[in-house]
Length: 428
Length: 206
Image 1: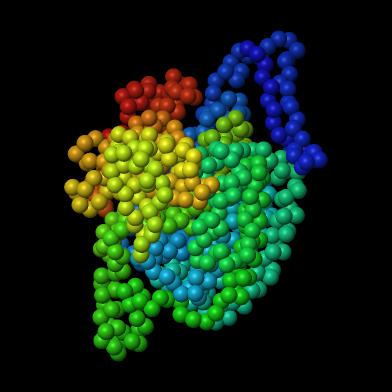
Image 2 (image 1 turned 120 degrees about the vertical axis):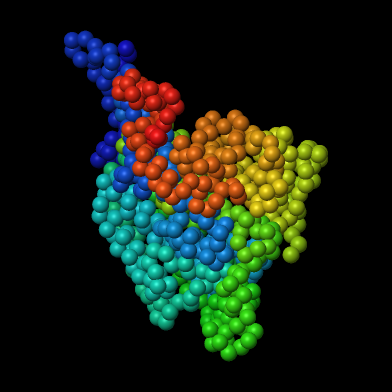
């Protein structure tokens, strides 16, 4: 049996001039008096990770085939959190589907709500009001911030850095407070309705958001100081889990995963919705397609979200939040109780629901995890024939076996973290 | 609301003739129906032809309509990242025939899990897929295909039977035979477990 050489990236105290880690080849020295046991390294070992394991970010199960410490193959098993949302949606009115979207990607619920409302509005050909559009942009960008903060904190923990987790969860808590003040719920806000919003923001809310926007970039700078030039972080992330530009496209990746591989595609820029083309923001694009680039992109996206939120606050003018269309929006309670026509509309909507015309529509939005698409097929009744979620985390995760080929076992944890999965969405 | 038809329709019709069954526009999205026989060829053509360049597979899914006579449709959402254009290609499958369609895994690796999900939820077989197994439901799931319209919301089995099967699940036998063989651990398993696995019993024991 021939001797094998294992080359691995060590977290050396210094990176080279380009900031890449210094790779130390570790030779397997031949013992003085002869050879190793014939069996050494001959057998592949099977390691089961999860489904109950903190580093799998939920109930993901990975079966890893190892040769020594090198990964030969990864077989992911998903479905432990399968809830059948798509089936359930076929038995619900369109507005009743919104609470289901909260529970798919539960780390960015408001963005899911917005995506669903936009898809149904596309099906119906509705245009929402200006104030509603700005409020939805705020909802989307706040979701992006909290989702990326969870990613940052948990990935830091996976790689052994505990402190940024505390910082990021502290900031996330502040966004959750804002979310709670707006919608009454922390995890399941259900903030949109078809044709408008569930509620307008309460008095004084804008001031709260402004305060958050002023102090949050300081935390981002702290994280940047802690991670970006940290040699342990660099050693664990640079050159690990690499996907080239062509592979990223071929594997249908989206969001930060796609852009880290150098593909300049962001739904907000390339198929603008909610007036994103009127906002001034940049889309970070990586070049190496490794974990480090994914980290840089997510960090920068939070900075850009702060920019968008500041512009959104400046754009926010008083006005109606709902479209003036009795087919989709309930009349105010006072009118429903005093005006016959309004009462009939109220009754019809509660009993029969919103009825889009027969047809089908796909609408994709740029969610924190990637492109979240909702595909509706309607036959003209109040319940969809088919409600399909295009789950960005599910599709991004399907590239995991490819990324883990030839990596080390400890890299599997880092690579899996870099995908930014949320099992509620993977399993639906 | 009238939206323009995608510029890909005319060249696709010119190339594939009657294999392009029909096209329509719904909510601004162009939908092209291609025949089952030439679906793979048409998708490969859309991906590789200059001027089309649909290099990105956004989604693969299926639709089962409430009308039981209506064919089941497999839906491909295509996108050209360079041209910033989208196209929806559909293949209608007669439900009286075996639900089979060629896999596009060789064109887009992203189709791997998406096709497995369609197989899992609708029972459509994708020929040429390297690893067509259930993905969201477990391997031994016996109730059928959940997103078919003839599948009741609460499932085919009673609640009691579902609970009984869940409790009877044998975690010991939870590795698939493939996973055990790659690890060469099959020989070290207890005799009875080997026999059960050889008989194809995975997941749970009755």
